[in-house]
Length: 397
Image (cartoon, rainbow, N blue to C red; front, top):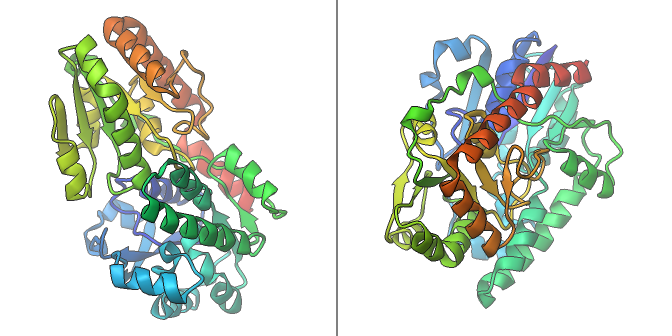
């Protein structure tokens, strides 16, 4: 079986949730398929020279890329708002030359499956149909319009609220317009599979979560600072910004008074300058993009995920649990991960719960460490990448 994966972002290096989800599955699919190729838009924001991808990876996966400047532009945003019915998020990835590149790749090999990673490459379905007999699989990373509906509910600024409402309405119509245009659908969470069914999907579907190779996630408790909490994630993603601001404004000052030794470490790439300035306060250590994410996670104790909006699956939670870290998250943060509160994770959905549960963890580290160990066992049992990839391969067959 020959598989072509098309993505709106180069999944290497796999640093954020979306690229990890695409790359890890492709790598393990390559153990079962005859060939796995990836064609990705190499964006200006996340550009990486594919010639620098290590040989041990390119021996398993063939990479093709197409450079496209997808930077946000105020002028283009205004033009989109006034003269287009498409959501600006999606319009940035629609490009005739990229369509030609797809045709070129399709003509180079007889593909059995074309796997589309995420909503923003669905506009190329028609081009694929005209140039290939391959089955088209839509790997739904999340319900995109749901992210913006939740963001809208949290936005107080009148002007920003007005724009996000327009974006949400357009994204919903855009997302719904592609229902059943593919042959197969592969949601990342069971919740999203149900939601897509409610939206009208009748095509064959299978839930394939993002998995990990547990042996790659080693940890050492002796290196962990027990008076630390941490967050790691893409800091140009508005739900992460929004959640951290809520947590710092509502919980952090009280936590500091109750636990004077506590420090909050925040890591992640592409933080805008205004957000860096916001994080400049007592006992909050902003590190930006860390060179070694595993070393960073290993050195800290409790992961905090105060997400108020967003959709899909949080890969960073999976990775932290694999490293036996206790994690405290909102219910939205753990959507799609079948965790159990106080058994393999801690769930808090309001200010009082976050404060009390974090304080309990800092006072009773032994109980928190047990939760972390149960978390690692849970991930090893249910999020093993090899078995997940085999499950998808069998579905395609």
